[in-house]
Length: 165
Image (cartoon, rainbow, N blue to C red):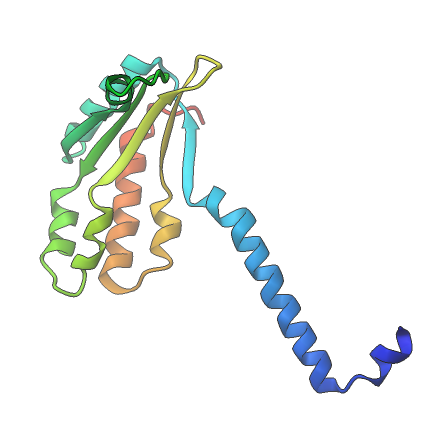
């Protein structure tokens, strides 16, 4: 085996190294990246208090809440029982205008508005999840990157008094 490796040309070794690097990068992306794209934090409060604090924090920070989804109620209508889950659509009108007012950036409107989800796990605690906008923004460029970074920071500002550090 050692003789076979020794006889390979440097070009072959380069290709083996390159392919190994690509494979390891893909493996790392598949195993690690999905866990990094979302942030989950435990709430200091019960489900109802968390929902109320997110609603008031949204308004206090100059953001809007165009919609709220009670997924527990929705699934119950279809015969499924799940623990409480509510998804809040939150929006900074100032930031949204920067995206929606630009032909080049409107494509990311599919990710608007920002979402904050609260849910209760079997341990009885309430958790908050949201997209890691700061990380996701690194995949974008220009104005979209700037707006997503600001939106992520704004969402965290809404949540900072609610989450367990």
